Image (cartoon, rainbow, N blue to C red; front, side, top):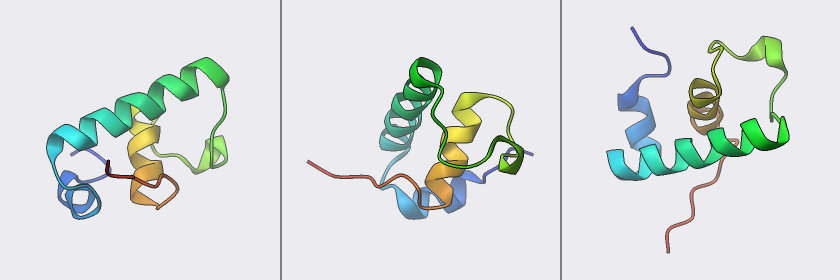
Length: 66
């Protein structure tokens, strides 16, 4: 089972497409800058994409609709 659950994430973001866009953008930022919003040992995921989804679930990423 994947963590975090897509059902929980879709309550935060309107669509799967927006979810993919936001998570991939944040993941690329993590790779480029090595800046994380939580301590490394607090993440369940080992990869940046999973960590981006965890940040989204915890409310650390704010999604702005244009």
